[in-house]
Image (cartoon, rainbow, N blue to C red; front, top):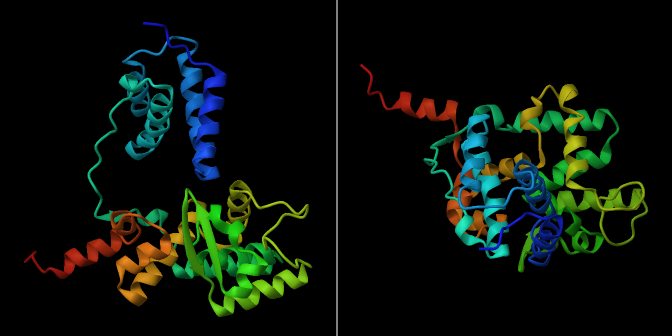
Length: 281
């Protein structure tokens, strides 16, 4: 069998393949980082059947969480499939489904309000409005670019990603604030959230700006990232509607099981449920 040596052009071809499949920019960046780490670890050695398994063991040994290891393996297995090296793929770790989520990572509504107030106090009107837009519509950070002046005027944005099209409704109060902001920034058409040079905001920039108001807001930095705003939207929507099927549609999930993850209660709330059972005399 011909030796399978990892090469930079193979990685470039795979990343190009992911772009053609319209994978989210953040996903591609994550896969690229993980694959580069694997390439570096291999150090020019030929890939054999045990290479991925050995890397998996190394990741666990150094303390990566099982879910983190599985994400890295997903990148690696996808690359092997693309290359036609499927016999080198490695099994994912089996993780028992959790009944509750880590309270230390859960962003609460009062904390969200404090983040908005902190951004407002620092004169960061774009950041304040951006957080409101994500949290009140449930859009992914990669979908922010679909919030255009035209979409806001229609009160709905058509999001097209990964070959799927879904409609995101824009609440009236949010639409008014977005149009007011666009007029202030002299944005007559196209994307509303732009950099000073007129470019789309990157995931990394949005992440960094949100982290920048944590101290003033008195919110743990580990809770502050765009996807947690989407989680807060999901729990708020479900509390109001009690309709998980509708929520799955709104979030753009193809499986209700994915939506269910968003609705897990915190550990503290789960403990209160257990206390109410009254089974300890």
